Length: 339
Image 1: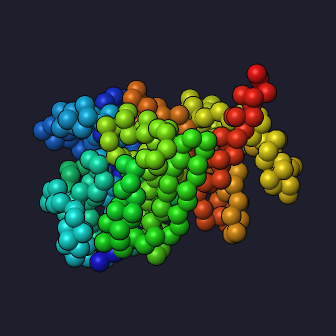
Image 2: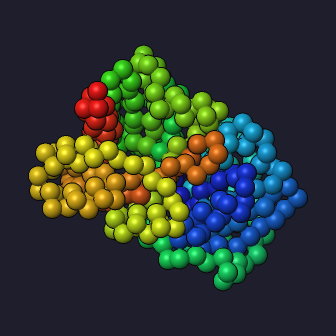
């Protein structure tokens, strides 16, 4: 009764052409197929083991009006979809739909989970339940560097973190780690839940309601409630990946130079690399297992909701929590120096 892998992530988009262009021409996804019904048009995109479905049309308008462009479905394969559905419902989920492809239950906010039968190679077949028409060579963009979906960051309301962590235990996702980070008069709390294989990892984040409003409160406001804050894509070599995607139009967050001054003190054994990290704005963190490198994109959507992360793991199993504090301190140091 446990989930195994993420089969696909479905996004509702207000502008079909620009969103598909972003994934194909900028991030290196390939358009595999298209499905059209009475009120939606869905395009299946694939890169390595990652499948995304971009859906537009009248059937998406209610979601878009309430939340803006964003994730509506995280479809997961299960060893027993019916039993997983029953367990999720017992834990408080509602049955949203029963499509031909399987069962769908409520998750967080307006996001649902379609529960599918597992396969030998997840993310490599056309999702069932839709009539797909094969794609064309013209929809193939430049080669991408994404290997898999590392994790999904989910922003929930303050005070509800434990509730959601307990809820996802019904899907076989156990608590993996937790982190509380305070940055001045703001703070965020997080719990990571994942299945034993690591095929499904959710980083649940929430603002501390006892602190002043911060970036997570701003996301909840823009998003019209809880939702997927970002998708993290695993890459083998983040610096060339960032350079290539930047040349194709992806906008990444800028990192203040003082961050790298601090980084030299934090990680003396990486000093030879820090010039490359500085030039590409890539962040670095370390845990007891190794290093991790990461960088976040700016949201490409008008409402500034969903964004993306590139992450390279050199043994690290964490999620870069120390970067939140390090970035905050670097920005504060730069502000004081300018006074």
